[in-house]
Image (cartoon, rainbow, N blue to C red):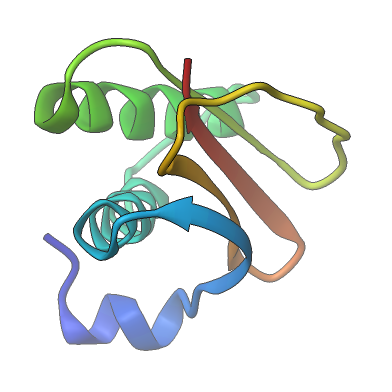
Amino acid sequence: MAGKSNDKFYKTVVFAEDMTDAMLDKALSTARDAFQLQVTSEKTFSTIAEFVRRNMEKEYGRGWNCVVGSSFGAYVTHEIKTYVYFSVASGVSVLVWRT
């Protein structure tokens, strides 16, 4: 779980969401935790996306998707109360949804 120092360093800004409060908290804290991973390759964003997706599936079951990046467009269909679009680090956005 993200600590207070992580919360300050990786301030989240939610752009759009359709999630329960508990699920939203889990998605945001998991993303903050993912940004703390020691990833030293060109696949940083995909590693973070995989971490978030796996943790959401562990907590809420299968069917989760995650996109992480500094420039992407998306148009997705999602189950009710399973969508959030936010930033964790400056210039990096995260999209999480369940199908």
